[in-house]
Image 1: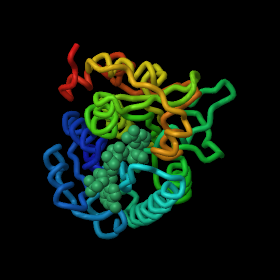
Image 2: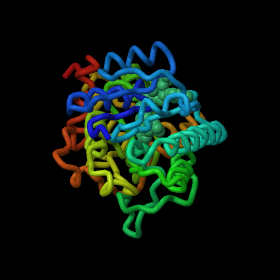
Image 3: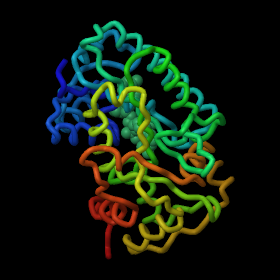
Length: 316
Ligand SMILES: NC(=O)c1ccc[n+]([C@@H]2O[C@H](COP(=O)([O-])OP(=O)(O)OC[C@H]3O[C@@H](n4cnc5c(N)ncnc54)[C@H](OP(=O)(O)O)[C@@H]3O)[C@@H](O)[C@H]2O)c1
């Protein structure tokens, strides 16, 4: 088995293209699935070789992943601007069907050529312990919240399949690009953003550069030690939305955003988006346990100014 090959699903996405760059920098050979010429160009520019195919048809491309140390699954079906609960359930059904097909296809590979699956989800899947912490030891939540309609059944399918797998739970990922770079910071700059949630609600965040370093370190862990384990990738400081957007506004030289009732935010963006954005839990992340993986951006205080500078939005 080639210990230094990674196979990426979702390599053209916000997080995936940076995982490719980080993995290549760390000495991995990376192959990534692309379902269009546009995705193939993004993947090639990030430094991976392209395997053409669709997530729904893994039998057609699984041999390309044979011999890799890990398959990193960052697939996310396109989602509408307003994400209703019913649309979320449709996305969840699609992800379950991709996962079932993927694990079945992986089982057709000989055990000595079968990669470990690194399944990536969000912290909505995790239940707080009796002290209110989300952590790598968390059990799965039993109530529907945020994006967990997707992640919980996906994990169940993987565990039942018997393929070796690690489960990564990301906080909300921010950075230049993605929903923050493309929509949230421009809305704050234009005076159109409204904060929501109550005083005790916090955003639990991780900067994309830290998230991808964590993912690449997890891919490098010893297979027998890392299989069946959960990893939580978050920064150290849950933050009130008013603090986060207030610092963003100050840095961009605009007024701090006003407020909207949470029910109105749910009407506008969809209930799962509000739920995945606001948390009351505390957090214990896996960064401390990963080799050579101190956080570059321990909190939004470091990550936000750097992000806005990269986007060319900082005035002070
Ligand atoms: N972003 C966050 O804050 C966050 C937080 C927690 C967990 N996560 C998880 O992290 C993962 C990646 O998130 P992201 O923000 O990077 O998502 P993203 O930017 O939307 O990227 C999604 C990726 O999935 C690919 N894809 C979608 N449907 C496909 C299909 N049928 N066949 C092949 N490829 C397909 C897309 O390819 P195309 O380029 O061809 O469309 C793209 O590369 C997701 O599973 C998400 O749930 C993200």
